[in-house]
Length: 228
Image 1 (spheres, rainbow, N blue to C red):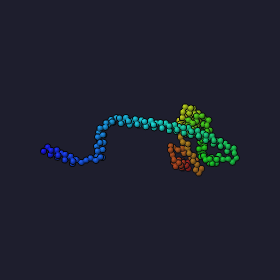
Image 2 (cartoon, rainbow, N blue to C red):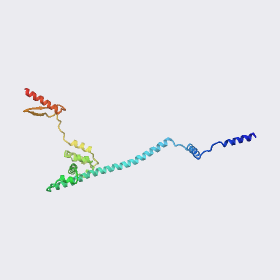
Image 3 (tube, rainbow, N blue to C red):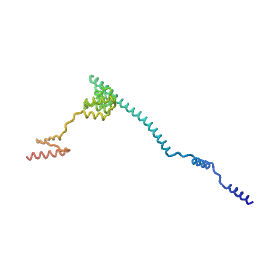
Image 4 (spheres, helix red, strand yellow):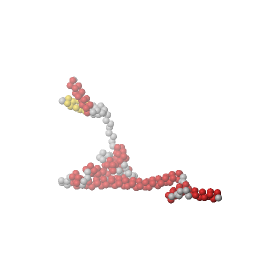
């Protein structure tokens, strides 16, 4: 009998154990799955991340090359458009010059095209319109070369370079500076001549001197003349 009593007490104790809810059961199952699942080494994550970055960089490189190609095409088209504009405006200017009462300035306003834009375009056409590779110039380089101060030797050298590729503004300006005649160095400032009440005095500025300083020196010189 004592044995049966012990069994009865043990079985009765099982009834006091609380039952688990479905959510708790699912939670315990997930924890067991996580513990049993093999964990990937940290190195594998790094390799996967590098591969992802490399793929993204390759895609970005393709997009960047396409965008760069579009900018080069747009730059070439911009120069050619300026050349065409200069040709058309030059024709209009010549027509109006031979037409009584015609005004090129008023005609430009009616188009409308700013006079400064028209002037630059006509210069580009006059100086560079006959070059078949003018599209290889950056627009700012074309403006620099079409300036009246640009030596023809510099223009010829730059246009030779366009046969091999694009020429930017920096290269064009360096070549222009190389062909410009060097100005003699000025050893000093020219004297300032001042005439007051029949008196004349020449004041030679020293260094960076203001107008006030020059006038004060002139007054002192005139006083010295009067005292003499």
